[in-house]
Image 1 (cartoon, one colour):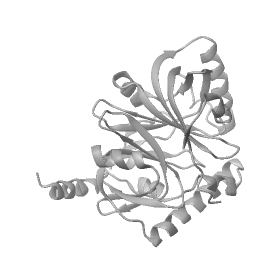
Image 2: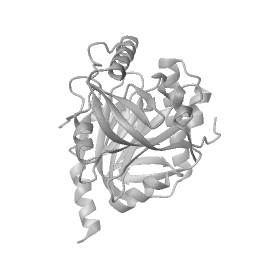
Image 3: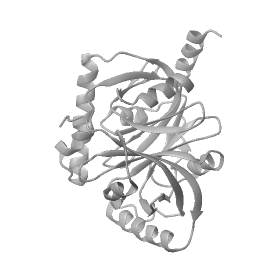
Length: 137
Length: 167
């Protein structure tokens, strides 16, 4: 495993393979949710799509740390990023761009009417780790 | 406190938690994610391969190099596991605590191989990705963990996502 730059995650941000976020409540009970979209905001931040995040949102209110798994759709290389929640955006350019992407993904997967963006969640990235491939193919 | 007795009682409780649909989803070639937390409450996500329902709860094959996950499980015992059908997006999440960590056997490697084959085939059929490329995610060594199941949650995208499932 190695520590990487956020730009090396670019293929993972295409939205072809859902990402996964793990959070925890104030008793340390973890929770897992799939994400339709992860976007780069700047060199230190990513935006995550909030579609069905009730438990995740409750957890982040008491514990802002989260662990996200991402897959490169071209190589299936796996990345794990550690992030900390900063804010939610319900309007503005990041939200609008994410909403357009979510609508497109929903149309492609037959989930129109099910996938609806509530907010773009902005997180600071604290660590990026690439999982070493096993070489088994 | 008699830990063995406590774990046995927890194991007894799980039987009524899992529905037959959840068992089917957990045991087929789904995408499996495990989350653990350290003593500071820091969450950690990793992939796992193959789940089987056993007397005490579930037995999960986790990649042997996920040392943080094993340290977390040993320290705090708590986990969440999500199983998602890549074709239908039907998903469940189970939660509970660690019962024990076991040694890998040849049967486990065969079980993981079957899961990986099914998982890769499902992705290929659904999204067209090359099965050989998908299998680059796979690990060559696994560590079986036995976990209680105390909670079952619907995670399928839609209005019921995040709601508890009761038998």
